Structures are given as C-alpha cells and as structure tokens.
Length: 272
Image (cartoon, rainbow, N blue to C red; front, side, top):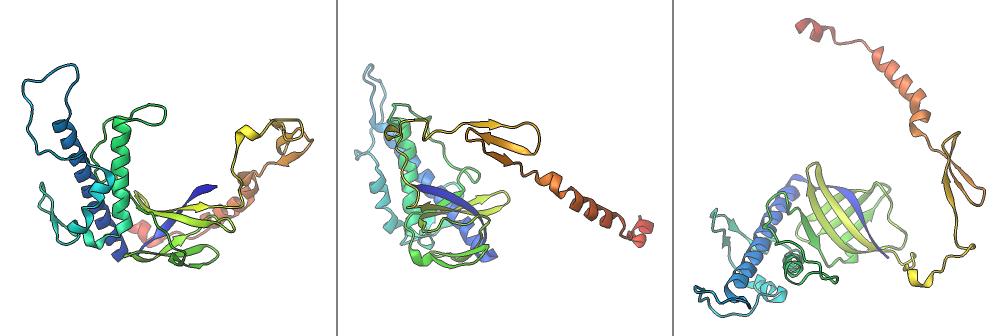
C-alpha cells in the first residue's frame, strides 16, 4: 500500500533561492505547454453543426502530446529562454530532468480532464495558467535509495538532485520496511515541506469484494460520554481518554506562577 508522509524541510539560503528559481521555470514551462495546446485546439477544431464564415489558416501540425512536448526539453536546455512578457532569461539546464518531465505530465493530465474527462465521463473546467500561488510543488519522480543518507531519531537527511543535502524534521516515524517511491518539495506560507510517497509491503491490499461481514470479523463501537472512558467496544473493552489538557493543568499552573513571580524590567517601564 502506498501512502504519503509530509515532513517539514529546512533548506539553507542557497537551496531556497535555487528552489524558488526552479518553481519559476516550472511555472513558465507549464504555462507554455498549456498555451500551445490551447492554440492548437482553437485553430484546428471545427464545429459539426455549423460552418464558420471566418476561420484561421494555421500551420498544419499534429496535436501536442505529453511526449511530443517533453522531447523539446533537450533543445531548451542548450540556451537561455527569454520570457516574452517580462524579458526574463530562464535556464532550463539548472533543473533536474525528472522535475521538468513531471511538469509535462501535469499539463497533459489537466488538458485531458478538460477534453475527455475521467473514467466516469465527468469533465473538469478549462485549465488555468499557473501563478506563484497556484504552482508550489516540484516532484522528483525517480527516487534512488542512496538519496537518503542518514536517519536519526527526529531528523532525516535526504540528498535531492542538483539541490544537495536537505535537512528534514521527522515528527512521525516511517513504517519499517517502507520503500520511498517519490519525493516532492512544496513551498507553503510558513516554509518548505517534503512529501515522501512510500510503499509499505506489510500492509495488505484492501479488497472489499472478498470480505464478507460476519459476527467474527465485526466489532461495535460506542462513545462514552461520562467518566474517564472514551470509547467502548462490543467485546466489553473500554479505552481511557487521554485528556492532555486536564493532565497538564498542574504543570501549566506552575509555569504561569513562575512567570508572574519574575521581576519585570523597571528601566523599560520608566522609559515608557
């Protein structure tokens, strides 16, 4: 079974600047692919119930595909790319190849959901061009075991391609025997986060068609609203409530009393 674990990352200043630059290039590459698909869609489709009096005469070409646009990456890495509206020069060679390939996949999936829909025939709205607040994640699709160099009690050190060693805070442990399949780096308002998609072989796959509910494999749960018990089961087992606030009240009382007994800064009060 695959699951995604999110941890807080602490990159240094140089890595933050480089990661922000990567996001800028990814946004440009995503919007460029989406604009190319929109141009082809508007210039090459015709209505079946009407014949327009005015129609464009574009250059005939095949419909843009994921791998067709992905094949442009080697040529884009040979020189700097100038952004039309801002004149900014972008260097595609500074990014990891798997990150740019994942951008192609995201653009292709967004356009397919708009044209064809999902397996149930439900179509999404027209894809939007990404800005700084809507494109915040970079995905490293191919993960190698040597990326994870050191795992301590509360810290993980992972080496990302072309970014270097990144320090990660492990606030929850990883499952024993789990294999990291994918790594993504996300920028949020309060900092950077790393998402690890792991495959845990110890968890069996859930097959609901093969499970028949019986008295032996079923259990009843009931919430207890009085006393120290939190929940009760049909097997006459009761679980105590943690109640962390009630247990911490004596400690909070001692800390607040110690803080109130400290002498205040008299000079600062006189100055004010």
